[in-house]
Image 1 (cartoon, rainbow, N blue to C red):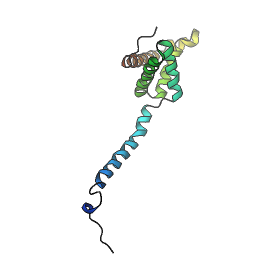
Image 2 (image 1 turned 90 degrees about the vertical axis):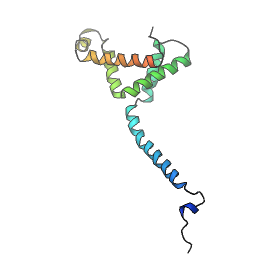
Image 3 (image 1 turned 180 degrees about the vertical axis):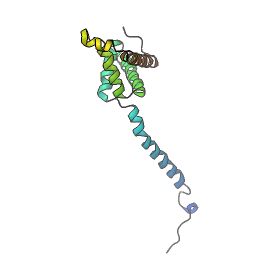
Image 4 (image 1 turned 60 degrees about the horizontal axis):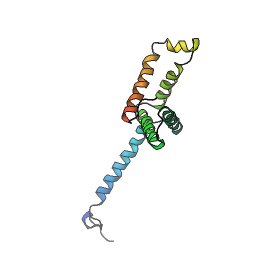
Length: 135
């Protein structure tokens, strides 16, 4: 029975250690991926709808505005979960409801700061992505 070869007599010498290091690093990165996905959980449809609404608000060359608007939604998605964004957007849209039903939200002191937060985050995203104010 032949004796086991020592690590230095293996065909590739000490390549086993760098390979195991690479496997460990890749495994670690794969474990971190679910946490990053939770923080950036906007569904594709929500992203497309945001980009389309952004393009309507910011007319310009198609490719340029698609890129800038996609950048803006990515910026928002890195700051808010989709659930948080959806809640803030719903509150923002609901402020325009007329009559008594709309007054319930317009007169609520807790709603205004939340809507202001969304507007501030959207302004930060617009600035980061070189979007000019909407016309």
